[in-house]
Amino acid sequence: AQTVTQSQPEMSVQEAETVTLSCTYDTSESDYYLFWYKQPPSRQMILVIRQEAYKQQNATENRFSVNFQKAAKSFSLKISDSQLGDAAMYFCAYHDSGYALNFGKGTSLLVTP
Amino acid sequence: DAGITQSPRHKVTETGTPVTLRCHQTENHRYMYWYRQDPGHGLRLIHYSYGVKDTDKGEVSDGYSVSRSKTEDFLLTLESATSSQTSVYFCAIGQPSETYEQYFGPGTRLTVT
Image: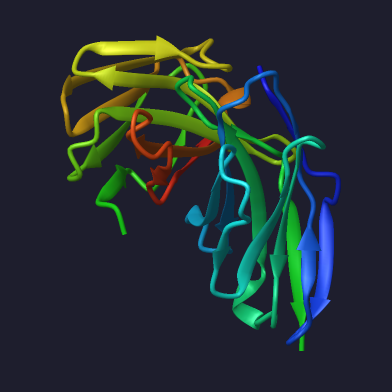
């Protein structure tokens, strides 16, 4: 099974600042998809952003953007202008031509006023 | 939000009793998934379905069975619950031939005493 590693169990950022969450993955595939999911205290899993491996351009969704380095198998999430509502657990996930998502163990993001 | 509901949302049961969790979708997605979430493990796939009566095992399928008699419903059964099955269970839906995104239900917290 593919391995997804999130090396930062916890991160902290001040409101309005920028934070980057790290994710690396291991695969021998050339075509795959990468995702970041957010899980707030409500427990709901929310899709934040997706990246197709064949696309060189980094995905962006409003204040959320990724830095996708295919050769390095790295997929980091940058949150700009952090807000209190961004506090949550963030999961990196990988999906190839198979059937399921492979998740990292998550990074807990704390946002301080 | 994708139309996915799970029932019950919370359940406490005793060791050795059977338990069935239900996932219902209104999106007509072909693929449905059951994951469990435990601290320090992220989300792990239990079983998935790729059509009515078509199911297969995931990473942590021991002690679980599933059934899908209708496109919209996917049941997860613990034949004889154990304390190690205390967890939060998520149902998800997806269309892996299209976008590879998965959308999650609200989760069920199961406690086995």
